[in-house]
View 1 (cartoon, rainbow, N blue to C red):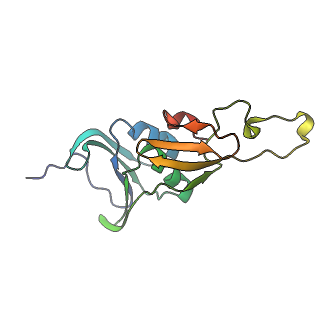
View 2 (view 1 turned 180 degrees about the horizontal axis):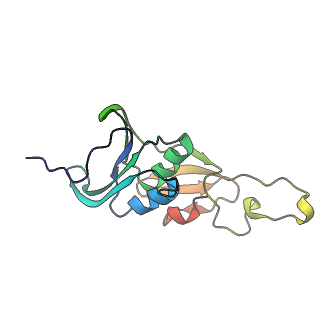
View 3 (view 1 turned 180 degrees about the vertical axis):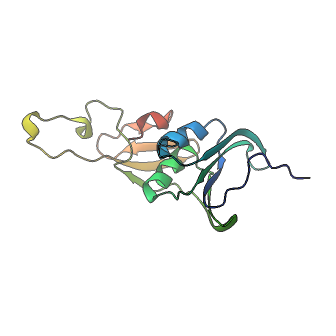
Length: 157
């Protein structure tokens, strides 16, 4: 018998198969629940695929592409379900991108993307990170070639 841990939502988004312990990072990415939508959260739920997983349900809200791209860095196995009238109308897996533009901050303080120019004499350089390896997730700064491998969440903008 299946047990329902969190009640169904009428309309909104369900983010399933979040790596265990990462649901709070996902909420931070989405700036929830500060926007006033009802949010349900389950952590360390049994999963055939992951062993354990987290789930986030947000009523009356869909995600924008930038949010989905950020989630892919925190929960690369996540599934996004769009719910309308209690039914899944769209379902897709997040995908790691070959490049992430202006989503991460470079950890190298000397990187050109972190340079501050006096009196605003220069345009800031937006970060670009290239996907090097999926498991373990490894990214590299396009400009200074610094690698990001651990605690990627800390470098999300």
